Image 1 (cartoon, rainbow, N blue to C red):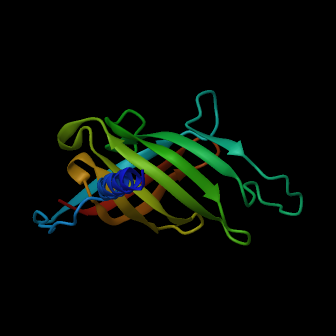
Image 2: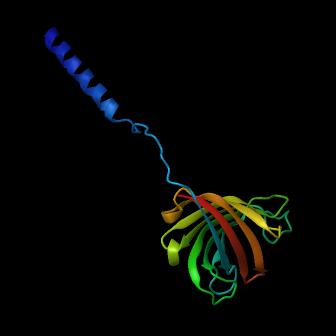
Image 3: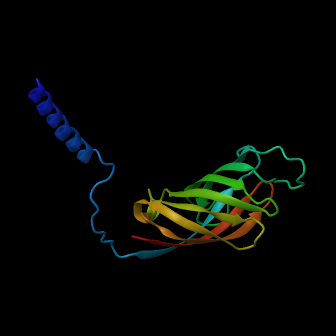
Length: 184
C-alpha cells in the first residue's frame, strides 16, 4: 500500500510542477527592435458647447462646497464629446472627436486634470487616436499638455500639445491644438 501511495504522490508532484510552469502570467522576454521613430505635427481645433440645447461637455459630478465663490468649484467632474475640426469656423471640416473626462483639481487655482482621447475619422489618420493625460492650467493663455499614448498610426505615441484658446464663453469654447507626436 505504501509503494502505491508513494508513486501516486510523485505523479501528482510532477503534474503540479508542470502545471505551475505553464500557468505563469508572462511569457519569455524577447529583444525589442523598434521601427524608426516618426515625428508628426498636427494642427486642429477643438469645438465644445458647454451650454445650450446640445452640450458636448456636461457636469456629471459636483461637490457641495459653499465656501468657494468660483463658478467652477474644486471637485467638479465633466465628461466631454467634442468635435475636432480643421478650423475655428463652425462649418470647418470635422476630422474626429475628443472624448474624455476633466476634473477641476486646483483648490486655489483654476487647474483641471484632463484625460482626452482624440479619435480621427478622416484622412491619413482615420481610425487612429491620440491619448492626452495631463494637468491643464485653465487661466493661462497658452497651455501645454502631455500626449501619453495612441493607437493605429499613433501606436506608442508620446509628445505634447500646445493649446491656444480662440473663443471662451458660456456657450462656445474653441481651442487651437498644435500637437507634436513621436510615434512608430
